Length: 376
Image (cartoon, rainbow, N blue to C red; front, side, top):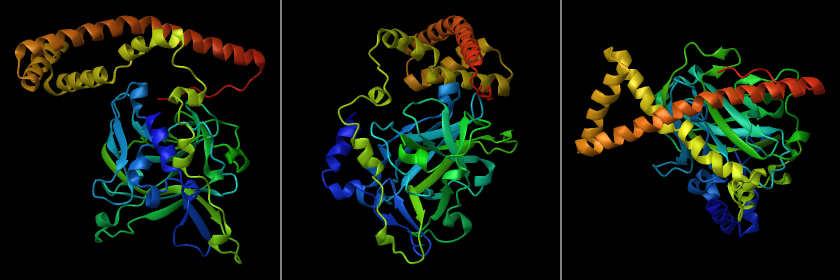
């Protein structure tokens, strides 16, 4: 990818490939920032992440990871989480061709602050870690509660506006979707010899299911560092510890490869070529957002589908485009796409259910443990 090539160019200095120690609690712990924000810069670190919102499951939430517009040396993960059709947002590092070896450390260390509001506990926050080179929904997760930014607590904003959260490997549980996979031990240091990705999730789902008091809407989390930590021996100095390879350096190993090649999957197969336009039609994010807008119109103003689509919807299009003819053409095109998606979806749902049944039957015949059904 272009980002991997740029990262490779940034790693010409070998010393930049190894994370430098951070943090002030050197008496008991030493931490390293895998994002290398102080040296590599937030722009480079932001490029190592991709969006994983509930649009992949039919939702309409959205978020992004980017550099702080105020110029601080931190990342800002921000967006809006909606419960309709989903209820989670996420960001994950691009899949690594060469995994990180984090087995000599004790867990994940993160310095962050919630800057949008003072109610972090009304959401479920999770750090994610992948030990397999795939993009499936089975991943290790650990929950945490980010501290509220100091300016929201009545204190003036300071450059040190962060607190360190430490998540030992044992806090990470194997999950499928929002549910913990039963009977599987927690993550161990040995399993962290090959880490193919890190990420964050903010969700309305906790261990008991949907949160009854979940706070939907806008959120903003400032990330000042995200890395690993190690407990120090009492007679040691932090200079006695060797830091891990940075995430930016690991992403540089993807240079010259397409993103799908990093996961061992090809996007040039005949099946992929044939399915790509079909998937784009059926899982269109813009169509889901239009559908949600019409649902709100019907709910608030007690109108029918036709009025929401053709009366108010077309009026809004005409205002946006400044041309009623162009608005009508766009509306007809959207209607045609929505009808086509509805027709295609019915057999696809039956096919997916049949494939799931076959998969469960094969696992049962082989005596393999079944994963719990995924609850939405």
